[in-house]
Length: 485
Ligand SMILES: *[C@@H]1O[C@H](CO)[C@@H](O)[C@H](O)[C@H]1NC(C)=O
Ligand SMILES: *[C@@H]1O[C@H](CO)[C@@H](O)[C@H](O)[C@H]1NC(C)=O
Ligand SMILES: *[C@@H]1O[C@H](CO)[C@@H](O)[C@H](O)[C@H]1NC(C)=O
Ligand SMILES: *[C@@H]1O[C@H](CO)[C@@H](O)[C@H](O)[C@H]1NC(C)=O
Ligand SMILES: *[C@@H]1O[C@H](CO)[C@@H](O)[C@H](O)[C@H]1NC(C)=O
Ligand SMILES: *[C@@H]1O[C@H](CO)[C@@H](O)[C@H](O)[C@H]1NC(C)=O
Image (cartoon, rainbow, N blue to C red; front, top):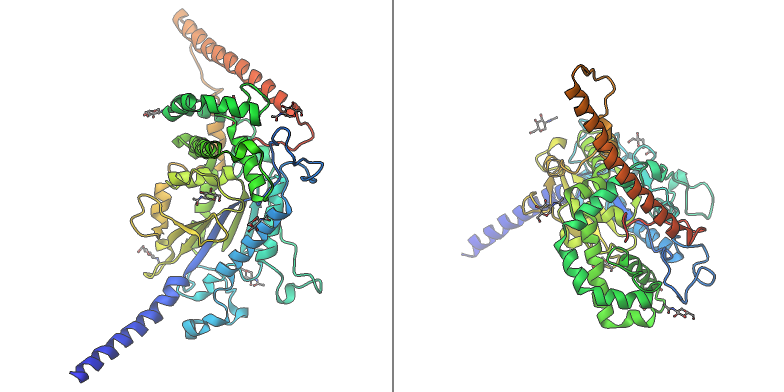
């Protein structure tokens, strides 16, 4: 009996060792590509509260909407986290696990070409040392996101080896790419030149259709009246459409450990503001069209990066430095309605492309994580339709997101709407009076609609202009809401 027992034990031990040997590299070391989308770090308020103790003169000396020192630390910490997760987890302590597979540092930047052994641990090292052909950083053209990208990169890629260029300085310059907000369909789609009307229209439609909005209009009427007096500029100044500004500014103060105004400490107020914050975000990406317009081009870029990597081309690491308005629609497009809550500063959505045990790039799988809290492990994000596991085959993820995905060109033509179809070369017979009448009607009707839309638009613009004039020196970005009253 003793004999049999030890035989079983030995078999088990051998099996366990074999599994360990097979699974360690397969489980952790088949990383092909990483795409990271994050929100900027802590910033000064964009919409200061009236009579706030903390002003540009005494606290936010760099102006409104600017990255603070806390925000720089948020991003520097995120950069170090990314380095630890993707850059150094193959460090010297892991050599034992990988045994013969482990390659010394200088050979780990093997060319990333088709035919590369996907099981090789070299592909795990997406972030050890900055390499201009493997890493790319893209930011929206706003001070706080550009600065966030730089603070993050300071933590992620301190110079090593011959990258050290200035003794005593553990920093190296790394390019952060951007395009003007009016031409950025990827990170600031609603600021894209000529798209405002489309966003206004989609937002208005979604609101008109929302039963929760109707319910809240009634339920919150008294509360919003009270809040208008306490936190706004008087009667009717705070509505369902702009209450997010109050919530946003309170989040700025709370994160900086600054004292909140007395009205904001009332538990009922806090409860209702949480509810309204959640509502604002759920409405922000509530329809398929809104999700597509707000996240489609970014989804296209993320998927293309992964598809290239799966085919043995492209970069190992793509970083996108964006906003809360970047993360929320993306999470919604991934089918995670639960995340219609305000993303934290430096919250980061991580797309990891892993080769599968079965082998080649066309079978690569995506794992998605959300790091909303620097004190906690990133949360795994499961995409509905991908099965029960966390890993989602890339081709399936691409199919699930196909309805959202937009090339920049498609985005542009959706913005321009039907006017994009205006042909010039149509030959029409003008013989009959009926045709003429039909043409007259066809020409007049859109004109009337356009006129009405233009009146509406100019009224809105002058209204927004007036709002903007109230703080003309501020780089003002009303990122959340296209239609505020
Ligand atoms: C940077 O990456 C490219 C492409 O993978 C590679 O050919 C090159 O050797 C790398 N450079 C360094 C310094 O590792
Ligand atoms: C409006 O709501 C109805 C029912 O909830 C839904 O079927 C319809 O698609 C919605 N329309 C829009 C434009 O969201
Ligand atoms: C702000 O201060 C002015 C003058 O001190 C006061 O009249 C007003 O009620 C205050 N407003 C709020 C919202 O506290
Ligand atoms: C705010 O206070 C908490 C708890 O004391 C502390 O952990 C945190 O670091 C503080 N944050 C800042 C920005 O000072
Ligand atoms: C993200 O962090 C914010 C702020 O701490 C929190 O309110 C929110 O619930 C968090 N979201 C998730 C999905 O954990
Ligand atoms: C990769 O796998 C797919 C699907 O099994 C197969 O069609 C393709 O030929 C394979 N490619 C290579 C390079 O092995």
